[in-house]
Image 1 (cartoon, rainbow, N blue to C red):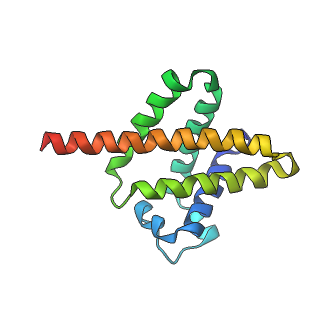
Image 2: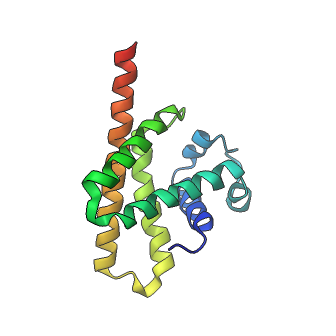
Length: 144
């Protein structure tokens, strides 16, 4: 999975946009752009690479999910509050897109056991991203 993080991450986002084209607006990507045009967008490729590094960090710390991984993704979720138009339900599309790309990457090696393990990790990550956004949203409201 470490090979070409940018490409793999971009593949995830292309799949996300395929599933839910309205998410392109969050990245200020022209809704008419498809595939190759979207994959060359420098903002998207940087974001996709950072996203894959965050996934890699979660994998590196599987034995310490609650104390190492959870705070990282809560913090990332807080940071995502600044993205205009991003809704919590958009995060739900990520899990399906990630599973699709992983299934394509692993091929026959994507056994039910491996699928279940990845699904649990992705659910954990997305749960904490959403939690971070909720915390940041409440903090913003309390500050006003």
